[in-house]
Length: 186
Ligand code: DQA
Image (cartoon, rainbow, N blue to C red):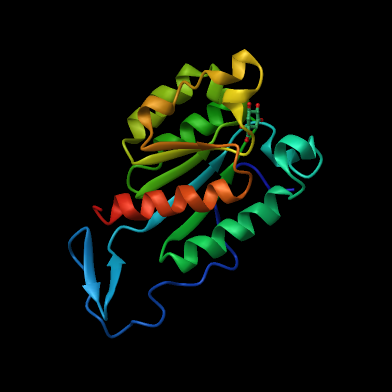
């Protein structure tokens, strides 16, 4: 189970800069070094909301069998392969998520967010995401548009670059790819 209450560095995230210490740091949104686009702004905050700490014990038909810690490991690896750095945060307390979003302006360049059920009604989280003013992708493991009517509403989708739902863990990889392209200005 993931420990709530504070951002955690991804344990296994490969450092995308590790092999290029002698290169100058790019100063634009992206720079082409050794044939690869190296992002100057590559810090992605992966935020999980209410009940997502219970992955692995929730309905596997909807949410798969991975625990949150296992999911975060996959996300960290996918991000590393894309040259993105990840930090992870999960909470079951709405105010804690709001305060975390408030803290992100100078701490992250983009957000992947699965708010859980808050996505469907928590307008204060929507406001906090707007205040964060960072490119964000909304992710849901399950296909929320094909489930109960109350899950079809998202109070954050209009603030997000994209929403990915119903793709299971793979949806996070898609979200990272979308954000990478966005951060590279593509
Ligand atoms: C969820 C979908 C929500 O409707 C639900 O309340 C969750 C998980 C998903 O990832 O599919 O807790 O966000």
